[in-house]
Length: 325
Length: 106
Image 1 (cartoon, rainbow over the protein chains, first blue to last red):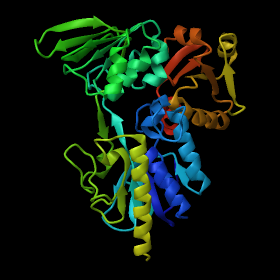
Image 2: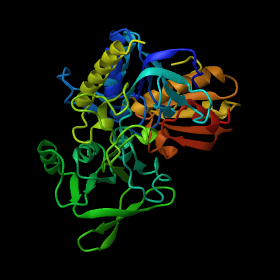
Image 3: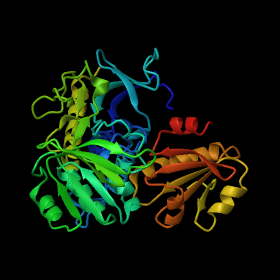
Image 4: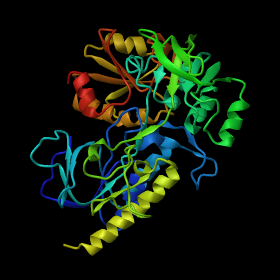
């Protein structure tokens, strides 16, 4: 656990360490601002050091890597690049922020502690988004026993098994295609009768003999006590429910932004994504900037997150120059 | 990897687990798993700081699938805790150091 350093006031504290946060760290470090990155705590969801790319395999669309690069390796490189120019890291998660007065205050650990853990002249929020789960009663209990939050990590364990992927967007199709390397069949369960995924992903999925589709279908319950054995699936056109045996389930139904920490302080849309002003990364609080997936419910790419991280660092640097006090 | 961490294989598994007096943590991992990379340095630290109180070991599931299968590991990282050769706890998924320490009773 980090010890409070109430004496020093950081120029820039970056909360989050995906492509946005670490790009902001590279730019801020190169501007000699010695950014402090609160990189989060290890978990097996997207909310962890390195962000969502830590749960992926091959990244084929990040420019500069003609043969592709593994997601975790890409993030380790980002981190090392910022460290080279003096960025500091703490493997902690912010538990509370106070943006009502400057310097801004950030707590780690006990949110009710009198003194904040960190004080900062500017804050860059890059806490990203994390994958949604279905929210069914025994979903958490069966995680690690058939229910998985990370296809990349766990696909290996489903060799020659029949498994399900829930969702119809790019990430669902990508996971399903990846999982066919191991599983004997992958059934995509989608609540509509067509996919939202991009054409190239759809073409890949339709051409794959191992991928089957259950259209207009929703998972209503998980079957199994110690181990996932099947899913109760409802056809949302007919209301008919069937139990289908599956030993594995991967969920890719969308994301939610990690913004609970900022409720009541930073302006956000109804869906929780932070609002920034115009083409800048400025939030409604002067000196607090936001970048990456936490402000983006549309593009959600590593490269767009990195781009906005660069902007946040430049906005922060400029703000510090203008408020040299 | 810390010198206090023992790399297990299918060939050495039973011997190490059976012959160790203190609790043994087996970290099931693989090269392709991002969260495993996050947990590894934390386990390294615990191995060094808690040497003698707990033994930290690692098992590569890619190279030793039979052991993973035997213990029903279907997600990595999974950390199984053994007392006298029996599994007494299963920790699924990457966790912060404080959580791991608490789970391990340290």
